Image (cartoon, helix red, strand yellow):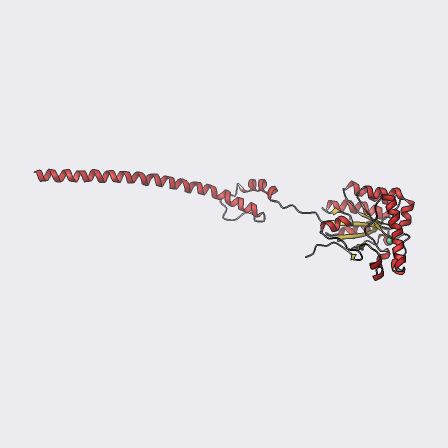
Length: 291
Ligand SMILES: [Zn+2]
């Protein structure tokens, strides 16, 4: 009997012990299980927003087929896009006007540039600066650049070295007197350049990439179309401010190019945007970006 009691006590004690251990373990398992599920749930809720952030950062990618919540994306994109959009520099164009100044047409062009916050370069002839100093002041005061286009429009290639130098200096001195500033650039008359002109000019020689031939056609629409259809970043456009159709064309060109997103700049500004310093005696036709 004693033996029987002893065994049952021992067995029941073991049962109690095992039961206690099992209960404890069950609790631990239960706790672990719940917290495990919670983290998984929270991971899942985070995932969609992470993936939409990634696509927005890339900017170029639209919806990925695996993205779980497509309804949230448009909202997120609208909020994120303005912050991540890269700042693009505007394409630039330098309009240039030769042979002036002219008391009406030049002023008309200067006013149009002012209206659209643009600048241009006027390559003036010395003897006309003497006639219309007020117009030259007006060009300069509005942030436009003045360049040297000789004293009386002689072809520089037909002059001697000293002839070229004295002709350009005469105009330069007149400009110094008129606007208290010497011109830093030259446009050779007729676009004619030889080695003598290069070595005697003492300034960068600015030619062009778009020749409107406005002096020949004297037609507003033809001139406007020529510029607006061809214009690209870094162009230098040749026009003449002596003619009424040219001034009218310039007004339309300034309005249209500005609307297309171009910034109208002086020759100095054009090369400054490219980080280029034009060198004396060198010929420049454009300021296209190097590929
Ligand atoms: Zn000319």
